[in-house]
Each structure stands twice: as structure tokens, then as C-alpha cells.
Image (tube, rainbow, N blue to C red; front, side, top):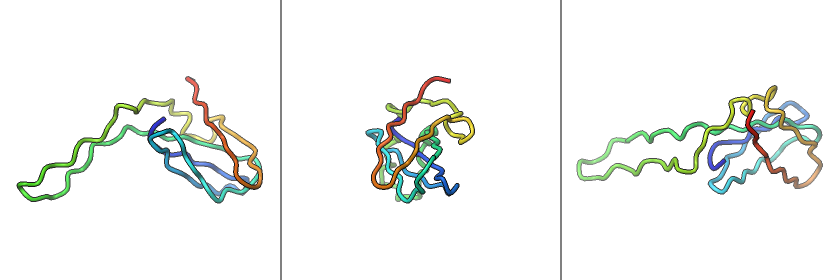
Length: 101
């Protein structure tokens, strides 16, 4: 996944999120340790809104959708995503593997 966001729910039930970068990495801070649940959101990149500009000014280029692909909607719901990890104190790494549902 090259765009979107990852949202996690800590053991304290507080949610925090992080943006998915073009290389597929994400970073979320300030999550309570313990069992956490994870969701992944990757909506269709929207067409850019064209702001008011001068007559001689070029419009911005369209958003690049070449790396985007649809993921199952279940990954956007804590109850159905089935993505969980036990978070320990300190830095943790979790590669999210998305499977067809």
C-alpha cells in the first residue's frame, strides 16, 4: 500500500494514526503497551481541487494513482481487520500483511 493511513487502538482504547508513505512505511507514536488492534485505510486518491488561480497560471498536475490498489474494506474496521500485535515498551516494528478476504 503506497498511500492512506494506519490507525491503532492501544490497550487503553485510545486510537492514534500515522500516514502511509509512498514506500509503504508508516509510523505511529504514543500507543499504550499491551494488545493493540490495527486498521488500514487506503481510499482512492481523490482528484485535486483546483484552487482559484490567475488566468496565465497552470493547474496543478493530477495525483499519481499508479501505485494505488483497492484493499478489502474489512481492514478499515477494528472488529473485522484481525490485525493485532502485543506492543512492548520501546520501539516496535510490525509489517502489516494484507490478504484477500
